[in-house]
Length: 191
Length: 148
Image (tube, rainbow over the protein chains, first blue to last red):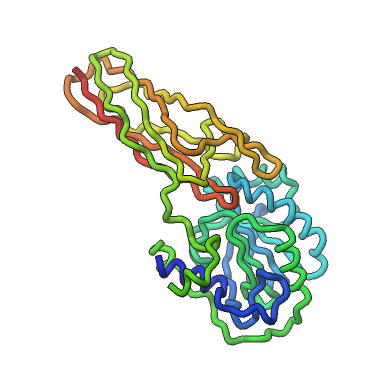
């Protein structure tokens, strides 16, 4: 239990001071950790790697078709993609549906989703701390570091303020001292 | 302990919580060809809900009983209680909350041998609260029976 809580704190940077940030959910540079890379397929069968997005602000959304709160957020993300796509921002959805594209493709069409979606797997979920609670959304900065995590339904303004702030950050890493997020498998198993 | 102080409660992993539990079903007793019935007590953790057996749309995962071994019993049709309506965003969901019973109807097989046994199955569910949904899970069901 304590390990799980510490993992939560590790991912959130609970002890970080807010002095250098504006959006409430954005972590200070020194508390950001590299977002684990992954290689997953999109609806066209093309391989998508998070590393391909370096230099962009990414909203990485773990979701599922059966998740009600996810459905509330998806139209927001669609609007944010439209609004900021040309400004160095992209939404990347990671569907955790067991049935994969069979369920996800018609859902995306129904919801008129305009951003890229991949089908997630256990390895990716574990790499991000054992994501099971949906939606779980990561805001990743231009250096590929996790700047914010939202577990569960969050406010639209919270996302927009976070992205706005991250887009305003420079392209040069402020602090290169943080390593990659360590494998979270052990911690997740202790839940 | 420090983590508990510093971490907002919503950020704590919640995946180890049993959101749905079932109580001991009533024992089924009957002779060959008898129609018999049992009730399975289901309890949803406060603050959570599960989709009903008839969810609001095709993407939502229903509450469902699947029998894996009926033994000397046949059938196993489940009668669910009346579902509640719950608004989530602009969608109205059909859900169950709190405590309720599932009524299950069996028939004792014409070829059943006298004696005790157990019908086994699973209650599949997908639970959420007002902010988070959790992966589909199932809980084991064991219905004891006695063929007279």
